[in-house]
Amino acid sequence: MLISLSYKHLRGLKDNKHKLERATHIVGNNGSGKTSVLEATSLLLNGKSFLSTNKKELIRSNNENLFIKGVTKGGNSQTKKLSFSLEKTKVTHKAENKKLSQQKAHLEHPLCVIDSNVVNVSSGLPSYRRGMIDRAVFHVEPEHAKNHKELKRCILQRNRALVAGGTEQEVTAWNEPLALVGEKVSKAREGLLIEAKPYFKDLTMTLLGPGYSFRFIRGWKSESYLESLLVNEKKDRALKNTSVGPQREDIKLLCLDKNTKRYSSHGEEKLASIAFVFSLNVAIEKRKNKLTTMLFDELESGLDNSALIKLIEIIKSLKNQLLITSLRHQSISKKISGKILYPEQK
Image (tube, rainbow, N blue to C red):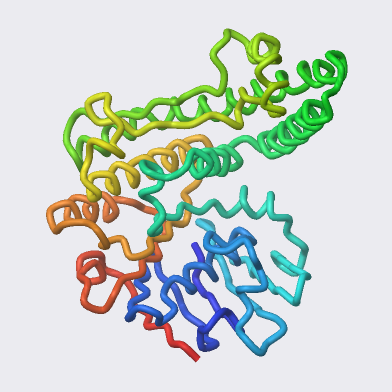
């Protein structure tokens, strides 16, 4: 559990230090910096923001660096000091004054984030869903990061040969390495999704009633990926692009076998999307035998009172550490007991 968090020169936030509890509410008006406190937590634990890929945006205007510090406490009461600093383009992430790689941080301090973009699980782009699934798999299969990197390299090289109008040999030379790593990536994704399915069914039954499911859509149709690459080579030459593979995979949330994007209301889409993220998180925790830190950003938005009550009951049953943002007029901080913080802008 993260028991303390301090930040300096982070976005528009006033420099501050907070003591955190198992459930901590970050309450304030729009623009008060609530989400930035969650972002500080993500940076400290994972070395990465769930909001921005441009690290320069994190540093408050007229400053050249930012600093985030905190202390975690394990089940054996052992504490560990963490720090994250950013100076122009240099990032330093440490645990007990020793450098911490992003991959190691990701594995040691797993996060589950439910933010305003969660509905994209239902209605967003396939790339959003693939990214979410891959981040989940990274938690439980360290080799997945290496395989994912190799997949991108093989696709890039094969596409270069296609764009250049390469010979049959120049294109097909990449088929076997691409097929080998592609099937590993796809199998790892599908395996975790299979483990998540029963939890998704239980959660949606509680939140939405019967009829909800999800389907994994593999990135090729033939029995093997290699066979599909050979079958589609003529098409790929015309497109100058690899048209099949894990880079085309997707999942679909379904209600009565119809896409929730078209069939469900916005509130139902959000609940189904949250249930999907929760179910992936449970699968991760079962594999790792370790709880994640859960970050909720304005959870009440877009949900009616009946749906919110059901969701809160599920959250209250969790043993995870919870950091929850809400607006001052919202009620979640009264329904889930915990510490309340009021962030301030500088």
